Amino acid sequence: LETVNSKRIHDAFMKKNTIDSRIIAIVNRIPRGKVATYGQVARLAGMPGHARLTGYALHRLPDGSKVPWHRVVNAKGGISLGADSFAGSLQRALLESEGVAFNIRNAIPLNRYQWKK
DNA sequence: GCAATGACGCTCT
DNA sequence: CAGAGCGCCATTG
Image (tube, rainbow, N blue to C red; front, side, top):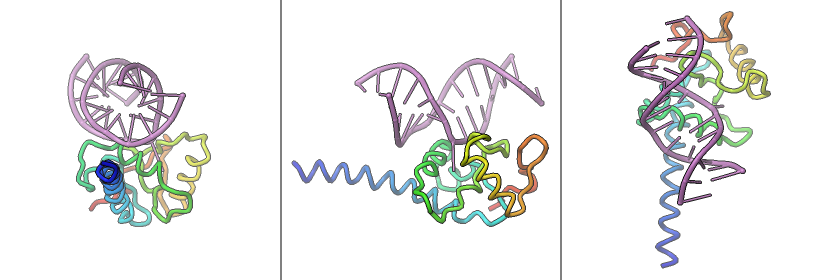
């Protein structure tokens, strides 16, 4: 009984881990100077309509991770983190350092910078 | 266990 | 074009 229960818990853990892995795998493919939307990443990861899961997976990233999380923006080309927050300004700074420009409304022109798989 | 809360996005006014 | 409504679901209090 003990082993069965722990196996179930282990399976659940592995499943969530797999979901995160697939999302991370996609994010890792976004080239420098390009961005992808949360929904786009979810679609490419095989779970259309689950943009929020992309956000959660990135939210759980450990500090110091090499995943280019800053290349993921929302459908409007904007940064979904608080513009005044530390992480928000960091994301913008990282993107600009890669040559990604923001328009007057603090959004990225997706027609120009969105990663086309 | 249940309600509220998001690193979201699409549709309809 | 802006805003409300709704679906989504892991996390949190």
